[in-house]
Image 1 (spheres, rainbow, N blue to C red):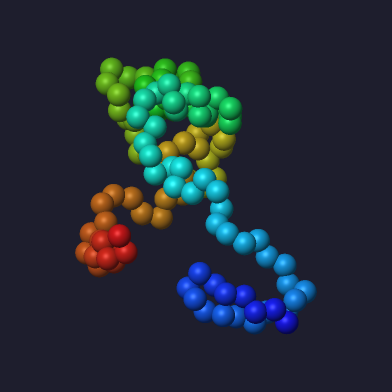
Image 2 (image 1 turned 60 degrees about the horizontal axis):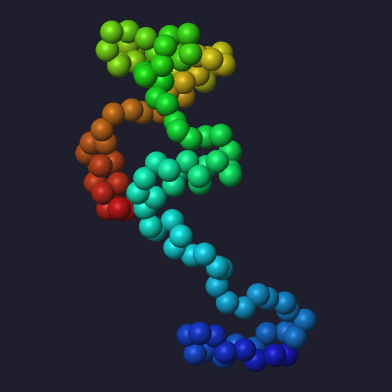
Length: 114
């Protein structure tokens, strides 16, 4: 058996056959600093995958997205769609159990968890 001293000061006895990495993971807190400008976000996602910038469906034309088109940027119909909807129609809130503002006991429980 081996005795190890933890950062809290506690001494623990573990079998000598155990293996572990000592220390903390590097790069912690990297996401705490804001990106501040579009160029930094561009370079961040350029090396990852093509997921930036995200264009809203209401800003598109009707041939490109079900929410597109119209004289104002509005969806124009309910944003909830059923689970059995065909691909291409499945945009928005898919098979939503509930929508809208949390009210009553649900709102109180949600506020307590924050």
